Length: 262
Image 1 (cartoon, rainbow, N blue to C red):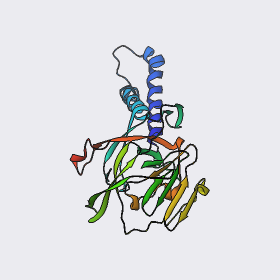
Image 2 (cartoon, rainbow, N blue to C red; image 1 turned 90 degrees about the vertical axis):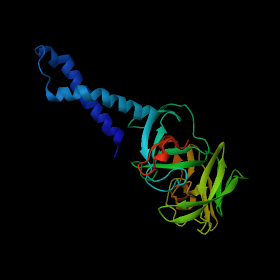
Image 3 (cartoon, rainbow, N blue to C red; image 1 turned 90 degrees about the horizontal axis):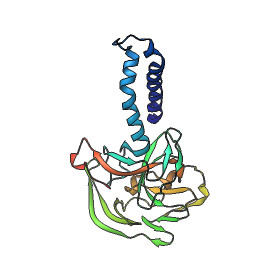
């Protein structure tokens, strides 16, 4: 469901009714006469819809985490806030960038339109930038020939799966973040979808190595062995970016989650 399009249509309809009444119908209406129901509702809802549309399109948009691919950073049921202007200002609905303000950095958690189906929103962590050589083999990450520092932090207990998973802290760029790696899980990618510039990646029994194309990003989930990401369906084009996730503002199942994440 394209909520931005629905908001835009509602904005146009209520705005048009309000403006038409203001310019034409109101002049012929007697003083103190009761407003027609449609006009009354439009005048009431138009400013509310306008505020929501502007905030959601250009400033901050809420999302809900639907899966465990970003555990332990983000949990299923987290409601997160996404900064819409970090990577530039885009026209709503058509998602056309009109002002360049910045670009994703390694370690950023980003929301983007899923390349195989842009009607879906996904969330992952940026691992590779345009031009990077990303290698993920035998559960270890190397970028441009430099191994990424990773330190064991004990075990993480998954309450839903009743399962303990090795817990690590990895440093990507300036970001220290937590991740899970199941040492017993196979290192290779079991299913690879056909995707644009598939020839930029080489797959083996040890894992995958990819050259990130210009204007694209390589993203991965923090729950490394339980995430379908760029290893499976390819690179994220810049035009698919929605914004940078930075804040958990609610979780019905765990109120302590509120205010977490950065």
